[in-house]
Image (cartoon, rainbow, N blue to C red):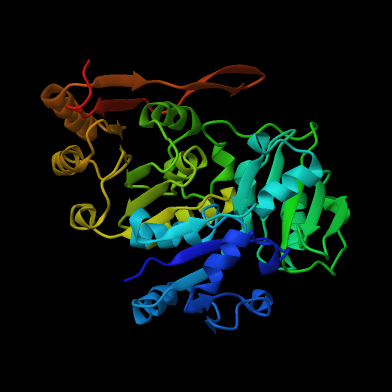
Amino acid sequence: MTRPLIIGVTEAGVTALSDNVQARLAEMDVIIATPRFQDELPETAEVLDWPKPFSDIYGLLDQHAQRKVAILTTGDPMWYGAGASIVRKLGVSGCEVIPAVSGLQLAASRLGWPLADCEIVSIHGRPVSTVKTKLYPRARILIIAENSDSPAAVASLLGASGYGAARIHVLANLGGSKEELFDGLARNWKRTNVPDFHIIGVECPVEMATPPGAAAPDTSFDNDGKLTKRDVRASALAKLGPFPGAVLWDIGSGSGAVSVDFLRLAPRGKAYAIDRSEAQMGYATSNGMRHGVAGLQQVVGDVLERLAELPVPDAVFIGGGLSDEVIARAVDQLRPGGVVVAHAVTLESEAVLLAAWQQHGGDLTRIGIHHADPVGGFHGWRPLMPVTQWHWRKDNPEVQA
């Protein structure tokens, strides 16, 4: 296969490309491009529309493997663009990428926002609720839109989340001759004449609520009582160590609270919520959507049967279904340097953690939480059930102590 050439194009079109890139295009046998770019393409090439679904692009490349193929994408192909997917599939040596200025860069420059200080989120092919994970006082958010309905959907979400005072900037056809800017507050957004191709800027005022922190309030989760309480959850998260792209196994996930909080702290992460109960999976899915996290995967069934199907985890949380066999499997499949955190509230499950601690080491901790509650006309401390926590990190032979 000849290496496909992936070229980023701004709204200024093909004629705005450098002479060198246009010369490269003139050598192509096949050019894959959206209709709005096709009128400016060399007449010597066979021009094809972008395939739908996008995954069909690989069949097209195989079909024209012996021909010179160019693929035109919008802006920077490696920034929320098709180039990233193609490079993952073909490898860095299997294609060549020539980026253009991205719409995000143009939007930031028009608004006068330092791009490094902006939160970036895409709702193109993703739920609008993912914007929730970027909301905080003084936040500047750049959103890659889905279509002309996106600004209204974002405004509705902002209003429902208590951010109705946020200012929305819609920057359409950036870099082209039809560039437009629409402004307004989320609470009274009325514009319906927005072009499909745009970036949304959201400017959050300082008077907004503080985000929930590492662990969201218990009241923000739908549940039937199977919920790792906030204070204990915060302790678990501190030891699970979420990071961008991290993979979590949440065994006995219940309502999915640990998975949800892990994903809020691990952009691009994956959390596999594992539970026998379909009803619990319903809670986990609902809670994921409510908090706007992506990457929550449902795994229903017997834990020991399903774990073999899952990718290697960076962290394992065991909140239910605790047994010697489950711990042994988690310890075995965890990546070097990864962590296991397990909780027990019964004497029987505590005995399992005691045996794991004696065999593997780590930290064994008893967590007791008391809340001040009314006692008649006064107040007293009301205890929650104590939780025994085992925290263990797998040795990494590549890391010297």
